[in-house]
Length: 607
Image 1: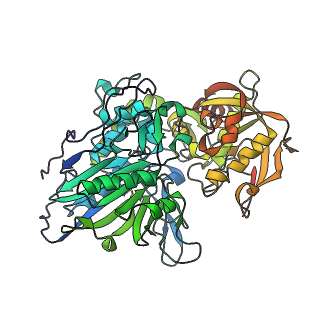
Image 2: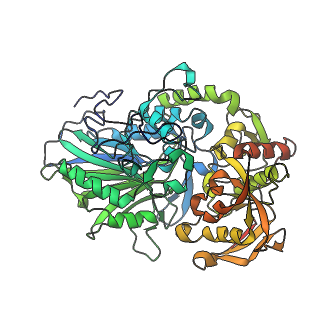
Image 3: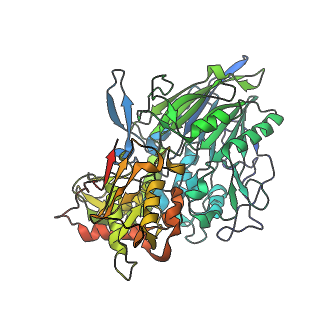
């Protein structure tokens, strides 16, 4: 095995030009069954002599949901909770690709067999430094990080399948060209999407699996995104694609790998769960009442073939390193490393050369904090380069705040920043010629950061909100819509927050001023919404009356399980969510009169 890492991995098959089905003008072509196999996938050797015994320890470093966070995320979005032995907790500042690079490189030292893998959402919903350039800076950083393989996540499809093909293969953006006038080279690692297929051919549109190999040690990786991806991305970008069942797909390709003689298998799954504690070092194998991990990943793990040796998961932005029984009742490692590069997971896979399989009883795994102590110079230089290109846009002041306004970093159902965004959307679409909105709803997953009071970058003083910070909060540039909904449909939408697909993990809409109701979490399903409490400006909502409701196009399309919101009539399209957010900040704040955080008192929660 050569210690030299190849710039482009010509030994594997990647996305190709499309034929037949079109998505935004082009679609990635379906690939024939089978994926690339390559020697020396890790590309790094750290001086330890090859192991000649029957077993060797393979280091698996993993992370998920980076979302283009090259710079250390600000505010509560950049913190992890550490639990001490006495039960007390503390918050630790963490994350940033400069520090993630240092930690991963340190972790690899002395480990001849080391693989770095990711479980999706490396790009999409990114801060301005990456999002402004269609996430090319993040792929450049991941190449420098020596990422070996990643599954796709739902956010890899934010700009459509054709753009994902470009992200993998390289080439200039069809509209904006290439930054700095140079050609974008593409990802040096394979994106895997075994369960994303061409509707016409049934074939995967990306490699379904990847085989890592060194000194005769072979480990297969199967990558999938959540089956529910179509419900949480813009439908236009994924026309012609089908998203299959995670378990069925992984079990299918497990058999394919076994036929190729690969018995050691890791599943990269962009779907996850929720541990009972928010502390990254919580023991989720604790047998206490209410302990453990819940959510979709549990059901997936219990059904996946016992031949799969470990699961690296994501999507929920939670931290856990658990064991969940496989169908044979034997414990199997399932991990997730929170989000934004705040953690990485170090898993030891003991490989038996005789059986060519992982010794499952010997697998160990733990999450580690990406502390901000030593920055990797090459990553600092990368951030400096892209910040300089983004600066003319990013550094423009657009508003002022008197204190932190938490959004993504808030664990409450109603978030202060969510109220602020909903108010901005209501005000922007309330005029008759803009839509005549009376109520605004904002999906919580669309809030991607916090507004932080402390001065940063080139800001002149504390409390300044720049365009770049506003963009980080609202990076999707979703168009705003106003629709007619009856009072009954609005109540049904509120019930859909906590029932059906959202019952296990509620998605609580952020609401505009004047809209109030009670959420009783001691009950189950739709009964959690106290219907008699739903009011607008203090008056009960009339089930038969029609109301004009503002929301982004994702919600008005029924996204996130809100089918009722997709039933709106007389749709009117307005400005983008970012435009109305920035306009509101400018109209309601100044250096002398900054915005104060909303009280977050519109939803009364009973627990």
